[in-house]
Length: 382
Image 1 (tube, rainbow, N blue to C red):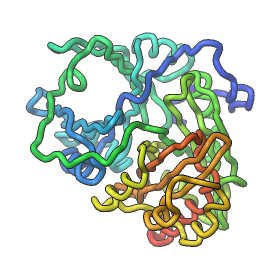
Image 2: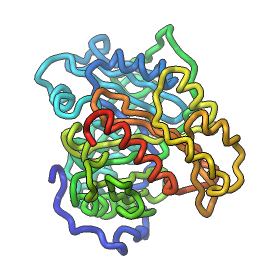
Image 3: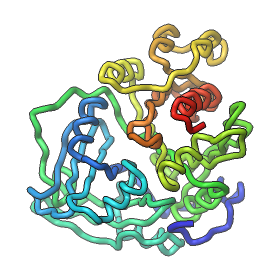
Image 4: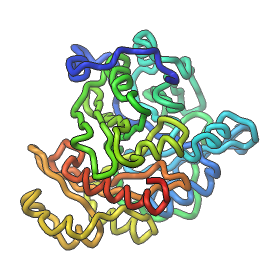
């Protein structure tokens, strides 16, 4: 297994144990960086289709010689899109291996040096020793560690920085600025890992980053007539960062996790769930801009009110948009999933609105995964 000191599989006690003190306080997700073949075109896509707003740019004009990056934001979500400027680079090799995909999930912390110390002394493999970057707006401290596959976590300390994004970036102010669609923050990010690797990575997040297990799903919870998977949801101490981790389970045909790993070339981020305060308005805007969503059969909505109880939204409106609903003890949630946004059937987005619910849509698993299987059948990969 890449980038991990071998840890014993997590027991329920380890996975569910809350640390006495949060040795790795995370303020939230600082940014998500994707390595892509053409960052300029990708930036245009995220502006046009998803309503992200231009924030910052780095490249030849700012003194970089190996890469070009565009930074976009919407609400508290920041996405960095990075492409290489030459052949035979680390970024290019990542794209060759994985296609367009998430390389960095960066956390906003108050002390990046301490975050690096706490995680590496617990077994994390270093990616970036603490470094201080400065410009006229102040300084930022960055550090980082490896996680599953080629994905890395960076710790970003920006308490002494008043610039647009990071030192080395300049404000990006193009004339083209389509309106946002109401996305607010990263709700969770889902990672896919290989056969029998989930418990090792659950242990990693529990023991190395101090996360605890919120919930677990086995192949009885997440299965169809053909495929199955297992999943455990890990959360940091204050609940601002949540990582469901999936692994394949035995089924009659190839599961979506196996398909992902085959096309991505290993473990990685499968999808990013982004929250909105009005999913009907957000999904309507996204659909009108050309974003394609998975659809469940119409019969899903026939007994929806009996399954989830009273909700604020009109059933016919949800039916027309393909939005799913699920309820737990604390309320309900609405969710919908895009089709993959890259040529390879790997990375996609989830749009979610929570109305009290803290769960992840267990009641929708069967309908959702059957919809994914229909897409796999069209692709010839089921």
